[in-house]
Image (cartoon, rainbow, N blue to C red):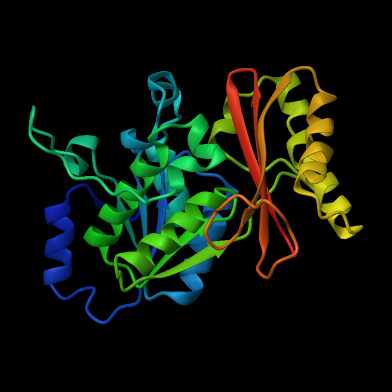
Length: 287
């Protein structure tokens, strides 16, 4: 049977007041729906460590910088609810956009901004995106008040952002990041992969291949960011259908682009590529 569906913030607050969640370790898996095995792996992680597992399904309009991308984002709530119940979710929070953003015409609206994020390569290609993510994550943590929140490494900067929000705004929540889940050919699982044509789907694993090439060069001792970026760019250049947006080498803890490698701390190598109508992103952590 499907997990009980909570549609409103008031309903959730009533659950909290009823004492049903008192002293429970609540694990939250925030999603935009159109679930795949990557999401379900996060649910599994939450199930192992929580008394109550909550999944949220909310296609957040504030983090889309293109109206057509928002319009074509897959929405499959019934299928999602069934998958989540089978994976062991106890409660499903699926508010409407009006419930999350009850905007009155012309009235001032609060939002959450994380300074410095707009300067990152990903933000340059998606203006307003991280402000939208920061705002919705803050709202979900404030409404649901989980002990732990689970994100996937595939959205690497989202994980950095979540950690910064929790630390900087004093949420009593631990951020746990699950490894990227991949198709057998290496393509990172993503809800947007459904938009790929058969030919595009065959080309898509090159995005991960490019990161592996960069990783190999790094293992072999290459420490020039420009040389490492060129290494990944060359792989993408071999596929005429792909347009490279960027290759980034950033500090894994705060997302800042690195001028030189060799300092302490993990490095996140990430890439964004346009393939037909679909934008693909991926990343790996360099040891």
